[in-house]
Each structure stands twice: as structure tokens, then as C-alpha cells.
Length: 452
Image (cartoon, rainbow, N blue to C red):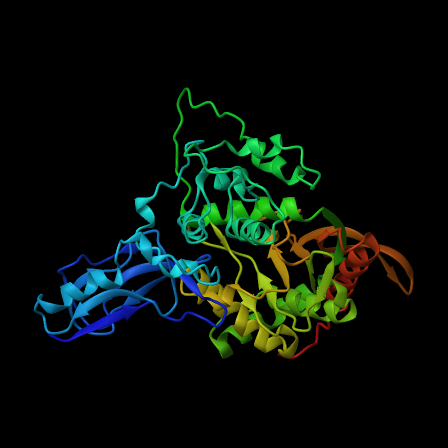
């Protein structure tokens, strides 16, 4: 009978692999065309993979938790409905023989992870390793002792993909001497026992252990979901990577508030959607970035990478309580109407878990609105590999001193705080403070008679 391969779909130009979260169909079950077969995840985006044909699922080639490259066959479907010849072909694609790893290329080690669950993800020293790290270790013949000795930069000292690839590269160049494998797993701190002249303080984070948490009494223990684990790892990494500095400024946005109050009803009636302050904030940020382009950069070692495109990420809270940052690409090429449409579209699809992987990547600067929760200001954590993030607080009526032709007067004004966290490796107080002040200036000078 005829068979077809269900392949990991292409989900964006910069997405090359995905993790299988859950199989929705078991082997032997009938599948309709376009019916969802499994759930996959790339970074923070979850999505379902539909069947390309109707038939019977005769073989699942990967397990839940495996990382699979785009274009790789993940299942075999018998389109004839019978379960005869195709079953013999399936094990060949997912052969458990370990001899399939002679290719030493690290560029694509994740394509063969069919039996990653067969190897434990925790070492004898109690250290956690992801299936991806285990796969790379197997492909590069990294022993358990060597794996346990690698300094981890992830949460709680975990070894990340970047860590193990750096180790493999250093070992090939003869720049590292790790303990020979003797069948025993050495604890991670053992790496510092060798008084090598090379800079080894990087092991320190791995040696730190999380403080003990008492679980006595009336408590509830909740396991983090996948997205919360990703957020936790990313936030810890950012604080370890960038020396954070935060500057604050207060802005009088009375003109902006009056403008929105004047046009919001007619805009919603005409366009069928609401207009928020967010697109105006983004427009001000884009204008300020053009004035101070060194805010729109990334750091690579001792190199500063200046981004020519201005891609603004906007942090969005999800119904689950997690956070996601969809990106408005080339925001500098959009007018206010275009920004409004993009903001509303991304916000709606983010809450509905409908974003594509490419839509949360490639940001060069991030905006987060802590005012939507009633907060007047915040100290946001930089969204790596960017070097700055702006938080806008709640807009509140306050008495303020204003200058008039007749002299100073006290009036009720709409005021808000803006706070900018920036990477002090490349952004000093002069640049960070000047950029933040410029954003506030653009908001204060907003034309209340503007058409949209």
C-alpha cells in the first residue's frame, strides 16, 4: 500500500528545529487529511502539525521531548488503510542502533534524537541535561565525566547547547584538558580542581546551588510549564550577561491623552478595532532610535553589532500568566496607522497562541507596558541579545507646574514615568539618559490635532 512521510514543517526562515511536545495520535489510529497529529514547540511558540494525507498512522519516528530538524520525517502514514508493508520501512528510519552517529558534524546533531529518552537526562552527580545536549554529547563522543565537568551558563548551572558546542570546539583546538572517562561521573565542581593557568572562574555559576526551600506546612507545589522554564532561563541568562542600569524620566502626555480621547470612538467605528497608546509609544521609540542608533545594537564579545533594521518587540502578557514578545519588523517603515494595525494583530494572535516562530524573533529593541497593570514604573530585564528595554508606566492625573504667558501655574496634567534598562557594557548613562529623554520629548510634543 502507498505510504507518505509526515515531515517536520518549515515554520520560518530562522527556525531550523522544533521540539515534539505531545503526540495527539497513536500508532494504528485513523487520521483525516489536515487533522492534527502532534504538538510541537519552537522557542516560545507552540503549534500543531496537521496530517498531509488521510490514512492510518503506522509509525511514530520520534518520541515526545525529542528535538527534530525541519524537513525530517517524523511519522509514516499508510494512505491505503492497510497495515502491511509500510511497517517494515518505518524502523529503518528510526533505527535504534547507536552506530548511526559516526558523522562528527555538529551543525545538525539534532536530526537523530529518536531515542534520546533511552539515555537518562540526569547524571550520577544529579545534574540535569536536556535531550539536545545529550544528543550533541553522543555525536561528539563526550564522556559523562567530561559532560559533568563543563561549566553551565543556564539556570542553576545547567549546560546549554552553546556551552557544549564551545567545549567541543575548544577540545578540537586542544585548548582544554578534561578528565578521562573512567566510567564514573565526576561532579561539576571537580573541573576547578586542576590549577590550570587558563581563566576558569566561569565554573563558579555551576558550583552554586539553589537555596533549600522548606516544603513543610500547608503548601502547594506546582511544576513550571515549558514556557515558564524558558522565561526563567532567559531572564537569569540576561542578568548574568549584561550589567543592568536603569534610568527614569517623567513625561507630560496630556496632548496624547486628549488626542486619543478625541479620535478613539470614530477610529473604532471606522476600522473595527481600538486604538491604544502602544503604537504611539513605538513611534516615539523608533524616532529616538534614529536619533541615537547606538541603542539599536547587540554585543558579540568585544564587537558591537549595529542593527540597520528597527524591529520593535512588545511584551505581551498571556492568559496563562506567561509572557511573550512578538516583534514588529521594520517598524521605522510604518506610519501610525500601520503600527496600530500591527500592534492589534500581534496582540490578538499572541493571546490566542497563533503567532508564527519568526514573529517572536529578530527584535532589536523591546517595549513593555507595566502601566497596563496599574504600575507607575518598572525596572525591566533586557531581552537578550538586545542592549536596552523601555518600560512605560500608568498615565495618571497629577498637579503639575506649567509655564504660561502669564507666568507659572499649577494645573491637572496627565503624567507618566518611563524607565529604560540598558547594558552598561556598551550604553553609558549619557547615551541611555539622552535616548530616554528624547522618547519623552516626542511624547510630550505629540500633535493633538493629528489625523489618522
